[in-house]
Length: 326
Image (cartoon, rainbow, N blue to C red; front, side, top):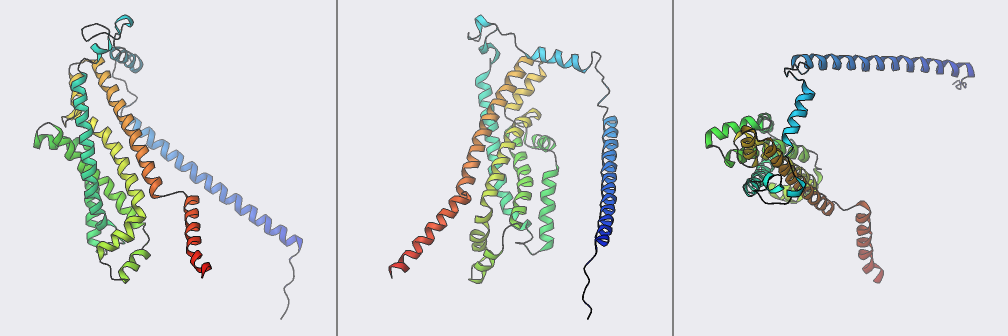
């Protein structure tokens, strides 16, 4: 059998030339494809801009002057000498936030709506997610039915849903709470089911081999794996619901949004700004608390790798101590 002859320098140069030509060809092809997508996206953007009439100003004074005039109306006429005076003193903070006790009660109602919607919606989402995960539910029809139901709950805009519930249950927090529950079920149900599908099934199979029922398989085989993700998604949804609850009140679904709508209806622009600042302050503080709680829970459930390795090493040393003693 003839031995393979080593390749000569000219042959290597030919291979390099062929490789370089192929690389340049593919690079040009990739650039042309990228350029085509950029051009297509630009055309779609221009067409959308034209169809939405975003560039056609119907305001006589122009957008810039109108925004400046609106901002000037929103800024209250505060006076330094009366800044910390009473409600009857013109130019004081108390006269600007003249209805603060009522606004605080409405803000408390908004927070309660967001919390109830997040808790009840999260519970229903978790229950439905077990039937929407393909690795836990072998019935394909059942999986598709749950997934499409979650899509339906997630597709309906919150404002439209709040208007429907407001017409059915009258104006108030009931409509807003039901809206937040359904929207939370739709969003968290999808996230929870996808997290369940990413869980390792070896633990579940081991528990099943030992005779564990379905509940024990889920409780000890699945939940410990994805609990940090579930808590993170739930707390994030709570932050979203805080903002959504304030917005839903504008359509009569209860909370601080109803006070905001009242200020808009009576063109009380300085009151509008006061309520808006109150909403922003509440949401920022609650978001910071929720974020700190989320990081604390996730850090406790998922300790750093170095900490886990030290704990494993300590456990291994403790386990080997009796053997050495023997």
